[in-house]
Amino acid sequence: METTKVAVVTGAARGLGQAISTRLAKAGFCVVAVDQVDSLETVAAIVRFGGVAVSRSTDVASPRSVDELEAFLTSEYGRVDVLVNNAGVFPKRPFESMDLEFWRKVLAVNLDSQFLMTQAVLPLMKASGSGRIINISSNSVGLPVPDFVPYVTSKMGVIGFTRALSVDLAKYGITVNAVAPGLTKTPGAMANYDEVALEKMTERQPVKRAGTSEDAASAVLFLASDDSEFITGQTVVVDGGLVRL
Image (cartoon, rainbow, N blue to C red; front, side):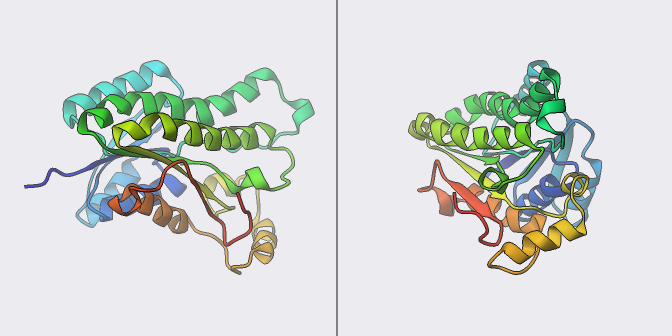
């Protein structure tokens, strides 16, 4: 009997992370839903349709906290087949009014966490001779968006991290790709944008509808599947055709 594949999703408590976790669970993955707070709502939604999921409270920007998660994954499952580095913060602040602490916090959550989480699951992926790492970036790296300097910097860093890491890990049968969603109606995005901004963005897109979390989750599922085994180092933009990367 085939062993159930394990997918680890960070930032899984709500929004895009919740949609990704649900989509992977529906595809048959056992989902480890990771967030700084418990992902109980996400797990409950998965269990309701018969899926398998567990919540793990982890600060993905903390080496100690990530080490504890690594120990749990090793002892409980002994494998990780898919890692989705989705955790992120989306704070808006003018550049001239921010300090170094603010800058470092954004990069720690949005970029450093991807480094830490990838190092944590790498031994398990190497042991199995395969793996899928999917890093969440943003189409904002190709747009003029004011007051988001650390955020855009971190999301461009995700693309560079993805491209470079894909070269180093290919020899282990591990692919590394990124998904760059457009403005999506999630709690994080709507804390900084309103319905009018969402409508204006939609008007600029070739595909004239607002993006959803499920749109990005579909791209993640494809990159997590065996159908994507010959794709690595790429960034898939999911924004209705607005940005070309």
